[in-house]
Length: 146
Ligand code: ATP
Image (spheres, rainbow, N blue to C red):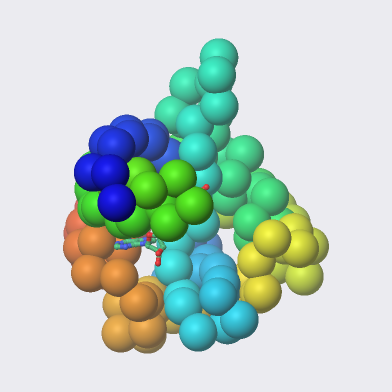
């Protein structure tokens, strides 16, 4: 087989949070038949800023509207696209967002589910190390805000 081509993708996503009576919750999405729990994110479209993508993807994937407070950081990982024989390096920018409105019942059909989780429970439940590191950072940032 010919050698794999290399692709680069940039996505953007968010940690959307709400705090009630000192309890902070964040929203996660379930994908791959509900087997993978992760932070909402998606490809940065042409003409879109990473901030706009993050707000749009959080709204589409979780049903929730949020306002960006700050940048959390970025992660990157490699994966293989079989149909294209391509190795893809994906970079994902993440933003901390305060919850404004909306319900997780309104998540789009692309994801299997969306739900609120207590922050510390979310840390133990996400499937990817990169997401966990981003949530850890978000936790520190939320503590400073509140
Ligand atoms: P996007 O949500 O950016 O539009 P997508 O759903 O097409 O993209 P990814 O979610 O990046 O694609 O998934 C592509 C591959 O990378 C899958 O095999 C997935 O399991 C894996 N993957 C997704 N997120 C991570 C992560 N944070 N760390 C490592 N691997 C990941």
